[in-house]
Structure formats: C-alpha cells, structure tokens
Image 1: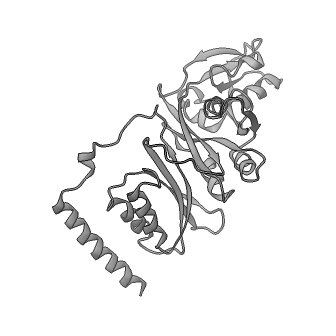
Image 2: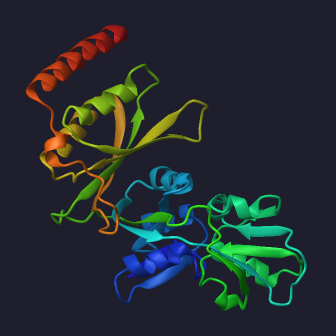
Image 3: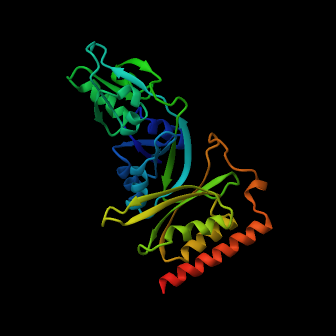
Length: 309
C-alpha cells in the first residue's frame, strides 16, 4: 500500500502519515496537497495525508481546494490530531546575527513574535526549509520546523518551543477513493456544495436542513471556484455519520435544493480530539421551541419561493 504525504521526511504531515498509514505501508513524499490528491485520484497511491486544520490558523485552504477541485472520487477516510511545536534551527558554523527565517507559511504564522522584523522565505514544508538551510551558502538564516526535523541535515536547534500559542494542534486527514464503514464511534461527515446560481438565501437553506434536525455544523468555509469572480463553493462539515438517519435526511434535503452537492466522506473522530459536544438533553429543543422553529422555517421558505417567482 502506498500513502502519499507532504514531504520531505521530517514534516508534521510525515509524522501524521506514520500514525495514519497501516503498518508496512510505503510512504511517498510529494511536494504539495494538489500532488497528493491527484496521486490518490489517479491510482498512483492508495491514500494520502493532508494537513487540514490548525487550532491557531484555522483550515488549510490549499488542502480543501485540492480535495474539492482536483478530484472527483477522493473522500476523507480518517483523521488524526497531533500537537505541533516549533524549533529554530541554524547552521552549526553560522554565528552571524539572525536576519531571515525560512519555513512553511503556517509555521511562520504560528511564530509571529519570533519572525517579526526578519526576512521571510516561504517553503513548501517545514522540512524543506531545513533542507534549503543546509544547502544554502547564505549566512544569517534560520529554519522553523518540528523539533526532530533538523537532525537529518545536521542543523543546530538554537531555540525550542518558539510558537506563539503553546499547546497548538493540527488536524490531518487521510484521503482515499473509498469511505470506511461506520464503526459506532463519534463521527463527522463532510461535503462540498455549490449553489446552481447566485441567489439570496442559498446558504440559509443549507443551514436549515441541519438546524431543524439538531445537527451541529462544525465547519462552514466559503472558497472560490478559481474561475469567474464571485463564484464559490461551501465546504461543510457536521457531526454524525452519513448512515445516521438525521444526517442522511439532512443531506437528502440539501440534494433537493438547486445546488451541486459532493460527498467528501464520513469518518471517525480522532479520540485525541477534545469532546465539545453538548449533552444529549441540551441538544434537543422543547416542543414549544420546535413549533416556533417550524413556523419560522415555513414562513422563510414561503418568502424565498416568492422571491424566485
């Protein structure tokens, strides 16, 4: 089995791939999320690992775009949440004042206090930054990467734990061409929605299908389609598995709307994720509130239908 990841070795994504891939899998280092998704889509790899969301910087747009825009058959099959901490590496013989720092844009953004007032060099990954630093003849540069990433390049760690927010975590997802079966544990379901045309109330209609069934939407992200200005798709993630009756009914409701809908997978939540779900008794509504919500929904639907006529 071949599993692609954002290389080279030593990246946080490489660490996630070691955790998510089956024992004995052949790990394949690729340059960017698009290359990873295409390798899975075209059958060159059986699965791929993407950095998908960070607790400090939010969702990784490049990974979302690759999954939605570069493939038709890839889905999220699993997730893993890992702690992230950064060290500053330098060449052992370089004692000149630090003038520039190289790393992945997300790493630089999580270490703003350190990188302020320095030149910045964006790299495809944190490990690539270490590789560049080891090969450059420029002096006065450093690289931000995982604590273990500098060893293969014989770099010296001059500072550790330089992130602005200690305790930050990143979520990584395993993408494949088939979704796993429901396993009974807490799950999430993801899909992409593109309104057939720009019209008032499109997003409201999507939200109603979930809110009326008491389904928690954990993520809604608007991303451009890369074509004409003003054309977007919504990446949506909710609690629950597609085999759950309420989730299935909500998705069926969205399918009945004038929108393109693509299923992006139902997968088990990582057990390391903090449980922020409300108790069951808090997720339900009283009969009186449910009646009010139903009346409001009917009135809004009638208004939207009148606008379309």
